[in-house]
Length: 341
Image (tube, rainbow, N blue to C red; front, side, top):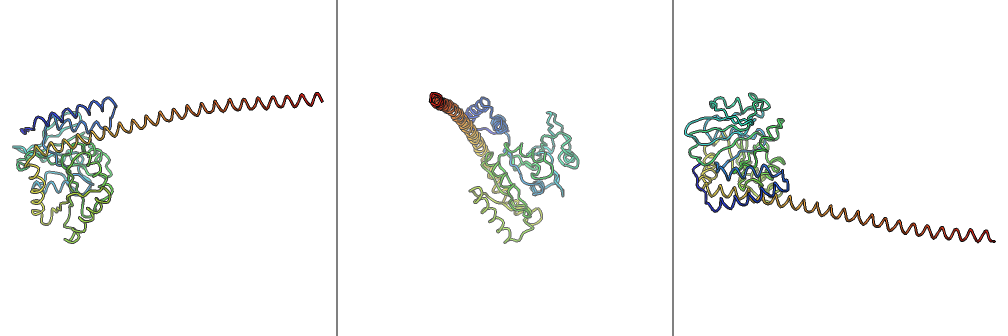
């Protein structure tokens, strides 16, 4: 990337991450490692901003991206299809790179992508695909951004969910796809709660809106906002989409309000996202340390209580021994009196 970030901001972020990394290492905060990795990678490599399309399986994520691209690059089907995270960005020529967990990278024709990203061609991710990177000349208008297709959540394939959840800390802007035939669920709300820690930009994408009338669309959007306000005490922007009806209109609205807005000041937006991740990490560290401190104080209190109980039992034991002595002496006195009589 040829972008130049303000040196002072980069310096500040690097210093903050160093402090957080030292704290995580010292206190073994293993649960924050993935978040820390993602933030450090952003800072070190200054990659394109990842606009991730997330959501439950069959929410129309891959279909939405294919429609946006104007070509069928990604696998779609009637059953859960996507097995690996797939990233799409601008390149001077069309190509695809398959990155494996062992570090190997293979360039493949676009027509072969399905062999690595679909459940039918790569069952159980037997080919150990980590990420598939696709470059397309048609994405020049989104230069500086990277579109990300993720495996669906909530399917019978648990590794689909693991792949998406493992990638969450890298998200720059989240487009949460929710199908019109399965409006906002508890799983969607839980995903939003997780995303709040990783990005300041969470957008709801209501897909398959051709299944709803205009009034029903408004009703569903109102339901979304009421649910978000009740459960999360916030509202989120909602965009409509259909790959069947009025597609060009929906696409134009999304391009103007999301993609072009981010591209217009990419570096500022990048730093805003990075700042959010660093603040979230700081809060995570503080929460961990507070829990550790409270646990330590509780342990100290438990030790003190145990000490007091032992001391009390010792005192009680002395009192009982003294009382037994008094009873014994009184019994001896009475016995002597009876004998002498």
